[in-house]
Length: 470
Image 1 (tube, one colour):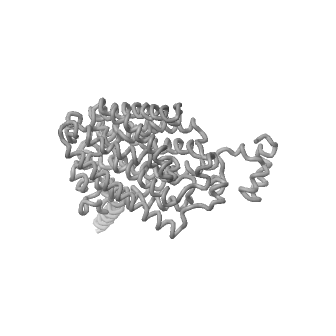
Image 2 (cartoon, rainbow, N blue to C red; image 1 turned 120 degrees about the horizontal axis):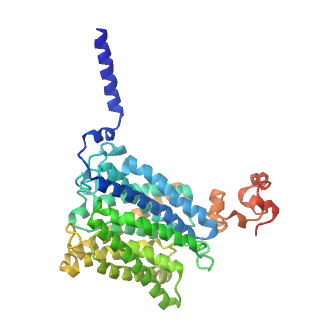
Image 3 (spheres, one colour; image 1 turned 90 degrees about the vertical axis):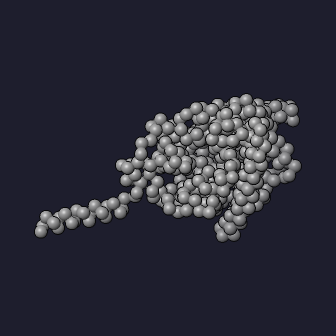
């Protein structure tokens, strides 16, 4: 009798433990084998794509003024934090979970339940579904971070964070399902987007434009006082973005194969060509070339090749890049000046326009000789693909544009979105975060004005007291 009771107790305890442990933990024991080479490459690619977002922080941080460096970089870092959580809780399930009416995934993968070691043949048949979710998480992180470029130097931090969580949930996740999700309506239609021209760049670029229009111009816009404060930061950010982008594009083959190598080469080629294209137009219009321009052109090329990287040949990637650099330069300078909107760091000019051109160019230059799983484009005898790409572009513009405006309005009415004019002129680093990227440029007499009387005791421990600063 005693032995029977012990058996019953052990059995009940084991059952309770099984109920409490997530299903993902059991998947490893029953999953089919995966390709270890593919698994290693996608793990590395995931890390590369994550590195892009700190790279973006440096890129944007170098472009803003000295008084807004901390705020701008913190906004980008905050996106990493909140979207990492949102993706695990609900984002992956909404974007890639089982299809619900071709619009969105259902919630069966809530909190990653059921996402484990078994591959999902709809997405990546040679790596665990959990690894695929990690890879896609990095895309979900950097996309809303790009929006910072459109609203820089004007927004309350808490309001920004709430907007990003809402945007990731109600704009990015459904759009990712439309284009990449099994059963998504644009996916079923045949729209090609290898690594995110529509899902990532058009969506964030258009959202950046909507934010710039909704918020209005910065207080000192048009005064000549708004200039990039740290060009080396811009170069560092560009280098990190370029490096990480190989994981972004080549990793989107979701395997360590020849298609990944083709995407890698197309990415590098188009990026170099776009930087050259930007500099040529810049020289023709201004009489000189700049390092900021070369960096912006390279980023424009990275954006433009993203939807086409796994579908076009190296030769056509040169054409795509050259034109992409020229288009993005004109959008970020001539068009922005003519229309008068304040897209602070050219989120729209670089990502919205670059992503739009790249998506259309995919319909022009795609070839099944490069990727048999894709389709031929116009130059290879299939003009219908251009129409499909235009449908993808138009639907992304409309969905992100209208949806972003609605979310901006909601956050503004509930929390307030824009800082005061006084805070904006002071600089958001000090006004919102009581922090400065370059504290040595402040004098001791200025600190109490910005930080309050509580800063006075700290002066005794600071070199500011000795008058060594400007």
